[in-house]
Length: 329
Image 1: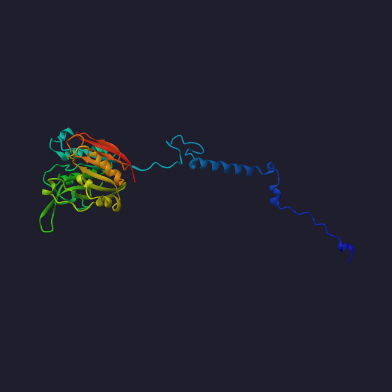
Image 2: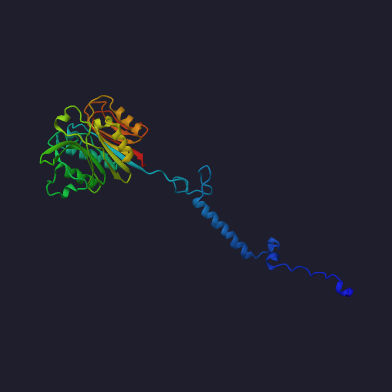
């Protein structure tokens, strides 16, 4: 083999790719257009960050919104609802509203319910025997619309209250005496809570279970607890002495039935009665809307939070409305 053929061939220089050559060029030699595009992208991303970014400490990371009342991108406020408990013991109805006749308790209850609705309440609870101890009302069926019942006359309490709930667009819980036919053709009476929805229909019904003193001579006791649905949670119903009845029923009401609010209608005959309502709220982790019908001071109601603290308490015998804003659970 000749020396020429054995001679090592010196390789030619490696040809750099166009991409490699381009990336090694000085930054100022890059096409100006590309820098403009790149800078526009940076500005766009910064604008997006202004709309949604939140710093670790909860403040806006970039910029502020001069219109917003809180930093953009922060957690939304928890949903809340206004609820009310009417405090009225059947006093002179004209003292509640001048258009009410002295003994027209239905007019007084309607006036106080309107007051609560004007203040933004979506649930209004009335006291035990809110309409007095007169002849019982025939009990309406669940899901019925009393105003369309051909057996009911316009202006009777059940019809008026159904129409009131529809007019005010509220859930209205009213305690009254009711009667219902028995299978044998007779009739039995109850101390009853009726709940009317914003469409006027009967959405809930509860018969008092723990009858007090002379009630058992005229009334039949209820057999179970009940609750009804609302957009702001399930509402359970209890009447007066039910509050210190069988704890297994309380457990069923707040557990199995899932009530987070208790519509509580009462006419206390003991002093410092609000302590029972506060204790129940704390023990069962519920909000209690307690509507009192007592005419004595210190036997009132109010709204009690799930920690047992009174959000608003009404200890006076004077008619009024207790209203509070509570979180939706």
